[in-house]
Amino acid sequence: MDPDRFRAQFPSLADTTHLASCSQGAVSTQVTAALGELAYSLRDQGAPWGPWMAEVERLRVAAAGFLHAQPDEIALVPSASHAAFQAVNAVDFDDGGVIVSMESEFPSVGQVLHAQRPIRWVRQDAMRSLGVIEAYRAQIDESTRLVSIPFALYTNGSLQPVNEIAKHARAVGARVLVDAYQAVGVVPVDVTRLDCDYLITGTLKYLLGLPGIAVLFARSGVADHQPPRMTGWFGRVDPFDF
Image (tube, helix red, strand yellow):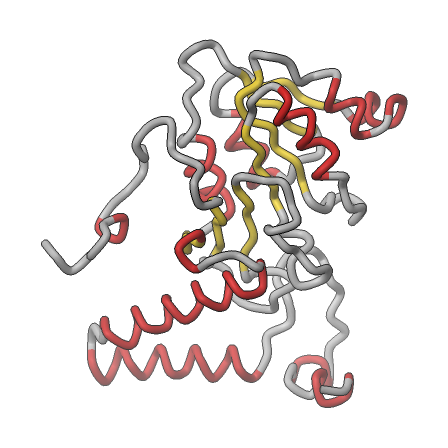
């Protein structure tokens, strides 16, 4: 699709200058049509669970495709904060373990981490003086259980050396969480090449979707240290088997 045809799908661009603010993307005719279909289904059928669940599964498969994951490695959740909570709470910190995270984490993830077990922040001044990799390395030791790394910084868009930092996490047996929300839709993100256990993204920003839909990738074979602390009806294998 050429640029003119692509831009024509976003009616607001005809009379509005859209400044990419790392927040809501421009709304396309496809999104508007889908919202219309949703509204009609509510009026026409009340609770059409079959079509709704089919759309959820279609999105799961699509998300797996653009992340190069398997569909059963993808969970759909309402926000990046929810995704971060699920990832962090799969890890056991009861032995005094700590989290290592960048001071420049986007608040959706950073605040979730801040509310958990003891955390060591990789400071901005340390990243400037030592470089990002060495600044992380200085905070990672045998007590580290989880290392969180933004794929791209929301402050300036710079891509972070995820795999190089992950090497130091792996050396002490820590798991790796990546927030790729600021990257997916702008640069390719391939979890088969990215050394992480968990990855977070969503549809709100550069995938040009809507709020309320986020994606959590959890690598197959990485077992939970403890059962989920937040679950519910759709946390079941078969939600309709009451």
